Length: 346
Image (cartoon, rainbow, N blue to C red; front, side):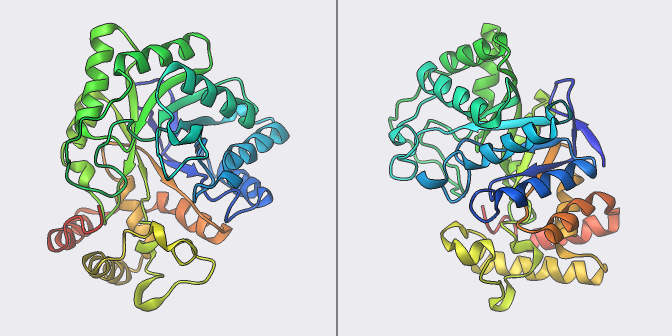
């Protein structure tokens, strides 16, 4: 396993992070524990979860993923061996009405409630990283490009950072991060923190894959200059980049077969790009999934690449991507495809 520094902290995290959002929906507790055991054996020390999980978000499975991780931590006594990250959900009326009536804000009341519940489910006294899952503002996230301004109201950033500072002082969290955030949002959080002596954001968890490299437009420079590491999610585009959905493929148990509402990776251009990437991987005698993951692993602004799997074979294949180092010629071949199909699935 390879390790990188988590943003500008002193924490060393595995370049591969184990995502967990299928546990409690597509995966049982036993399967989740088996994935955690295997990942730890392979040198993975970084686990990412959220109060929202399992996915898709439902009242019946809310918090279940954290509970599964909590029972594993208790059974294995392994809390000191892992860097543990979770997230607090923002507002989502009509989507996450089961979480604080869909009106949750990043204020003291809602964040205290969320954090204390997460710690209880995870059976731990602290989190290494606590992230805001999506902006409280009405902005372009979750696959939408282009910003349309509305006169929305949101908790002042200085108030949010002040509450997070209190969590740090109380020993409940160590560091803070953002997720699904824009360049303006990230820079504003950093500006307020520097001006007021409040905790600095150390990571940003956004989508990044061969099908979606929009992070490179604006955010990559901030990541470098401000030492805010990317935690890349959906590095396989919900499994699309493995090639398994091409030409009507996909098994009944596969994620996008079961939950087609999450598919933003199968428009005409994305399918054409996927076909080219899969073809290149085959020419290079590589697994398409491993080539796609190896590309993300190679990015200098990356702190960790969040993988997910619904079975052990997928997990083993994804983790093994750490052993692949793409050379300059191979990277240029990937760039040639990107120039033909730039960001087809934002």
